[in-house]
Length: 219
Image (cartoon, rainbow, N blue to C red; front, side, top):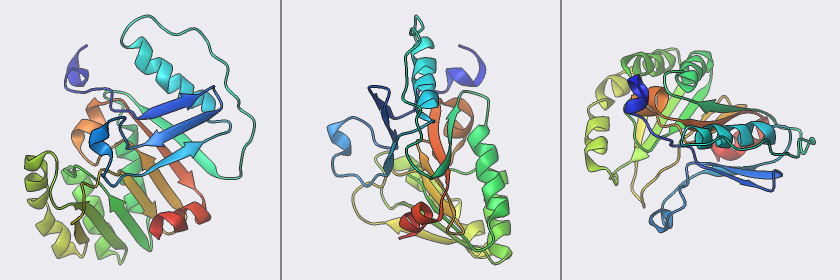
């Protein structure tokens, strides 16, 4: 390991069953998450191959590679989606998040567990709000990692001054990493809005273009 990969970890949350069904989101397999607020999804269809490839990538980073495994790639629905498996230093999700912040025209609603946006991302949110986009950020009021909530609050002022609405969730720990834009685009996965997730970790997210699912996310 070298560079940013030394600071990162495998932060993907993925279950693949019989090469037919995958579960992706922010939820970890631990009793600690039992009462937390999180978001995930069940995935079937052509993206199963990519989900299994993401698992194989994580596995081979730890030791011997897996043999090729079959996946059921038959069409299972009409939702347009893209699976994004990030690796250290690729910044795929950071570029996508910046792109969506720039493209949103009506609404951009974000939920994040450990918000520590870069200056570029903070500027993108501020610019969107100044352009009349309804930008909302939902974060935990109290975090399982206490200092992160404190750092997050130091970033509120420029957001609030630009018109971004920041909400602190007052229930059990909110661990979801989601975004929904203009009632037609959404992402759900493991990537937090911070440098560690964007640049150092292995992460796994689904970017979705579907009005019905986006409406569910907004609700």
